[in-house]
Image (cartoon, rainbow, N blue to C red; front, side, top):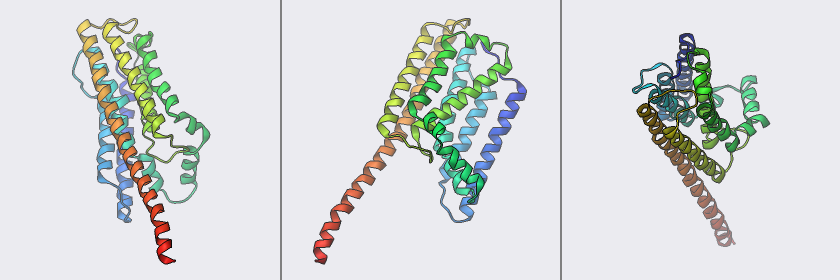
Length: 268
């Protein structure tokens, strides 16, 4: 069993999520007032993502200690980040900001070499999945027991790593380089496999230094396994839509090129 985050840390996280949601809705409203299009569904996705993160941090979740921990892991590190990233907050921020130093600074960071390497999908996957393997297959999970500050840092890492991985795989916002679909799809497949193997290992063997009940451990491992699969399928569907759109754009370009010689001959 792990200690929950310190109440002060939870309060800060809840306020931060609330401010992020309010800022997103305010920016979207500004765009619409000036006549720019911004899909309403993205507002709902971002708010739902913030709500998932807040619920994962301080909401009541069912199950015994490890099962509850697994549910929180899915909310904070997987499902919440997917909803937040699909809402494309960076794109919204860049569109609503007026030309000037702040906007140029954000673009400079997004297009910087460190950001490019950090968002290289295999690197992001190692940060995300590697952190989970260290957490569950070493004594780290036991070390945060009765240590609220460490538990808060652990939740923060889960959220940041989940956002990084999702951001790199989906590549929806403007960054230094958008890696190709084959690389992102392969990374997602391998990361999903690593997550599934980790969940299966937890079904058989508890994290070192912990004393979870067998039924609790197995149910928590199943939550991680099947919940992780569901989130990864959602990511794969987004990639499939991107692939379909890319194929359509390529086909339209080829058709446009094929029509040019015909028009040239008709003009002659």
